[in-house]
Image 1 (spheres, each protein chain N blue to C red):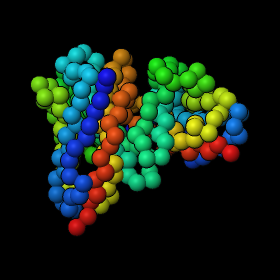
Image 2 (cartoon, each protein chain N blue to C red):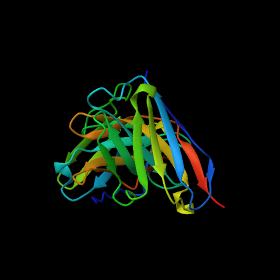
Image 3 (cartoon, each protein chain N blue to C red):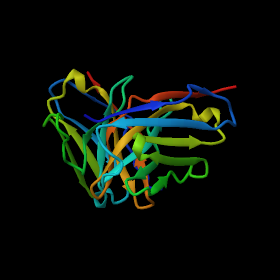
Length: 121
Length: 107
């Protein structure tokens, strides 16, 4: 059974750095084809993909946010960490981590429940 | 990056067929995935690789992709199908891209 759970602060101040942790079970990031992505959704708005890390430690970032994002993994702990620098109120959103399957194309087959992050002073 | 356009809303009566489109330049050459998101819940994958269904997704839900339009079709629509639906591709620029989402209303 695949599960993912996001954890991190619910409130951050503008200009601060956000650190989110995804703790997962039911699969291993050392297995070929396994990846984890972060996706966010501002209140009432559409989904936005942020970053992906794969089994081989390759990393991909949203073009529009890549200067602010860092994704990393700890395979032994079954965790993936996303950091986002210089937070702004427009970054207020629910942040999801997802298992991402790669069988030629990437898609998001299991999702965490999401964690709401509010950016406010 | 690649842009996909979805209608903001689609309405359908129970028992009828709903078609939700996802438009993009030559999207037929890409692989499209679809997600269902009910209020207050995380999205759920309902179609991958244009037309494959994950286990547990009813056969009433199907997908197709050709030319400049990918389509999610829901047959015999039920009240429980009311949700937001998002299409997604992996762009050649090596990033994930979502459509703007479509709210399906069951009349």
